[in-house]
Image (tube, rainbow, N blue to C red):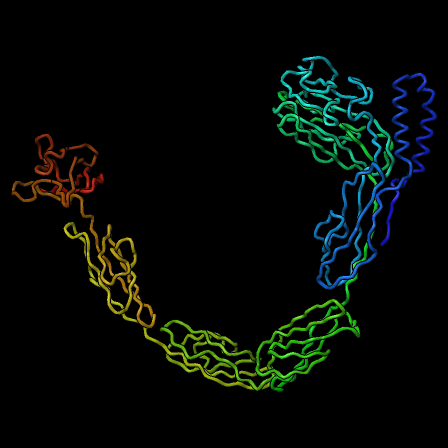
Length: 640
């Protein structure tokens, strides 16, 4: 075990000199300035005390640890800090294999190589650079800080926005504010703010810092009213840092917020708390225990040693050796230890020990080979899949098969080097391991395989061709009429049937369903026979516009009693409502309503005079038996 310590300040000596000189120059001003000068001197003295070189966190842990490949190991680390120091964070680097990166005693998961890890612990020094951060020095004294808001005191004095008051209870200065104590002791002071509708710095203080040093800026805040809680963020030298704190709507709930800051070359800085809530209503809150402390860092390292078991499996086979092969343990880093033990499992229920192993496999096949390598207490297992193919080949081949005319069959044969299928007729590629066969007639294919070991394999596959079923759909000329709106269909030639379109038949899977078309429809039936071969047939079912009215294309009003009137004829329940006739100039020459049109049509006269022979236009309005409104237009020729 080893103790590791790190000094807090790398610039301590330079910083101390600067502070000392500043104190000397300020002694005369202090005598003139009274209390204010004394407070400034106090700030400098505290900074001076903080700046003295001092011991930070002491980390105790082993320099090294031993672990196996892909194993887990814990490193017992502990730390101690001087009185008054507070540990705020711990972290490991690198993060590889660490289960909890910010825990000083994590579990490490190893890989195949050794690794050095560094633990870093951050702690806050006890001395605070902020003066009167808990507002308890004087009841309403603002000597230590400045604010963009105005100070006020007394009962009910915090009604206007943009004011603050140093109080021990927010309720003292506003009757709508919650009643609660400060964060420090519950009975001390706090800064109570009635926020205005603008972004402002509510609290600022100028302090001395060391260059090249990390600091922790923190504070506590609580809402005084639930409406529009404050949005607070730290600011240093006019620059906002870290993320803002959105206060909750629970009154009197103290919430801490803090940020890390690096001083770089700064020596004198102004730190502020900025309110970013711009709502006029609400935005009432209190702050307390403002702190600005130096962060010190301590580090320690541990080396986790992992033994080299970086092995792989070597495999060698010669042609036509009937399963005789050689397996070898190969260290990929060329590191071979005398203490290393090699145990084999060959994947055919046999085992052996040693670096190189000759072995005879019983069959051509894929085998999962396992090699267990052990060194002292570390054990690692390596696996590989090998393909033993140095036998005189006897390859599997696809079985004889049957397909329908126009279909194809997938042929295949076991693994080889080159392939040749004959005849090539009907094959997509006769030189591949798994061609697709689409012969028109029953065909026997011969396959020749040259294997990697130089041997040749022969076999055959027969593809039988089944004819397609002959599907016949009837009736061949179907017509759905007003009296027979449905029509029975029928199909023959298969074992099962599917009719399309399905929504216009009573059962699309029946052999003889009823057709229920709403318009002229082509019905297609697909039949499947016992061999799963498929064929189709179609029929057309005519559906005239059943429910409507008929108007002749010509009439002869010559008094012979035949076709003397132009009259619409309704059928299948069509109801005539209006019937009008127009000449070629668009003038209506005759009109009739539903009460008379069916019994009396236009007789070819206009106002008692014979209308001239010509082509006349008609407009018929009516409704089908289903209540669907229709307008029928057309022409009719008057012949005398």
